[in-house]
Image: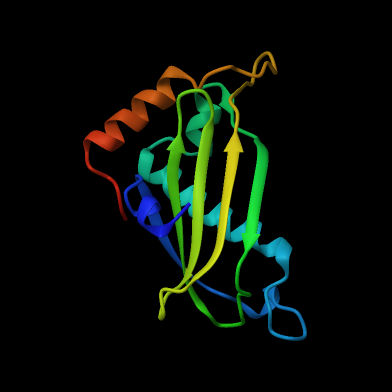
Length: 150
């Protein structure tokens, strides 16, 4: 997904700085830590929507990740300042969030990713074929408020 298409998709930007404990001996971020950066951005997006992981559980649902794809374009480095954009792409039948990690100084695109989450009823353990109505209402209200950027 191009930057311009993500810029027109409702989302939230999260600023991060690469910590020492995430890098290898070459000061490059180990690939597994990217998931953590996506999670921080996803949590900020869900907080902005008003339906975070605690709200999900309180309403009787969990949203496990069922698919994740990451394209590593350029390496992330120790003490590099990043902007992780988490954009809401789909929310009716599943929750799909697209991400871009960019260098905060140069605006260079470093990583593209997406995650897909499916609603699971906590009481029955049943996978739902659409997102719960409460979540869809929260997204509609968030969009109506114009919460497109943090």
